[in-house]
Image 1 (cartoon, rainbow, N blue to C red):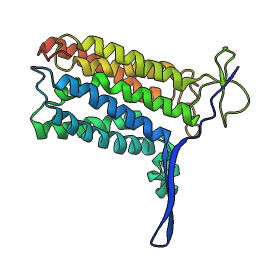
Image 2 (cartoon, helix red, strand yellow):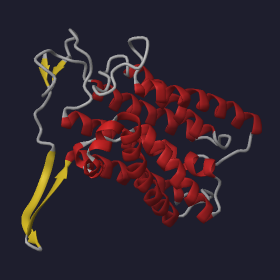
Image 3 (cartoon, rainbow, N blue to C red):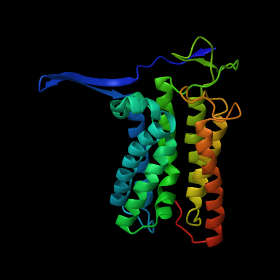
Image 4 (cartoon, one colour):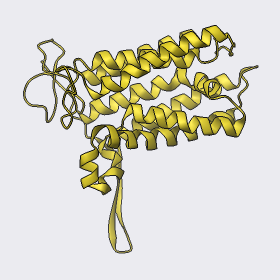
Length: 274
């Protein structure tokens, strides 16, 4: 039996100061830093790809796309969490909607936010949505993996009780060891998905196929990990004694991704390679 490392969720804090007579405290949380690291990694690798001859992209466009995507992640992720996971609580406590440093971000809401934001980006730069998502998708797992490490540091979203030797005791989850589901997701949604997408993207592929692969495999990995992850306490299981909100939202990703993959190969409009 292992104990999850007891890391302070606050990475560092600035000295307190007063503004208009009010004492202000500014703290930087590891959870937020993980998002920043993910965006930096995405910018670095996407910029490298943009510099290659024939990419059809400029480094400035990459920076602009990431700016749009960051807005989509933050706004969509938070709105999605409020709507999908805890609407009653936030209806009763509206100011808590803005307390993002305590966690509470929905991947599926963030995905919808990013798609919307990148659609606006594509209109601005004369690019089709699937061309944009195909370009950025291979590096998105960097942010997904980093975000799950942030969940692990916060000791949240833990798994079910287990007798496996790598089971961990998490703060606030009782004395019994649990599945470190955050690390499973970091490995699958981060490392494995990154390898799949980068490898697939090294050759020219039909437009939309990289995005399709992202949807399919993220949906599959998330659906499977949900079997060993505790459901959100305010929701519990939605049906059958095992169906979670994460699975309900991930199943359409798998179906849409599979349909998009078939559609893209039938059209055979080729995109560039990495």
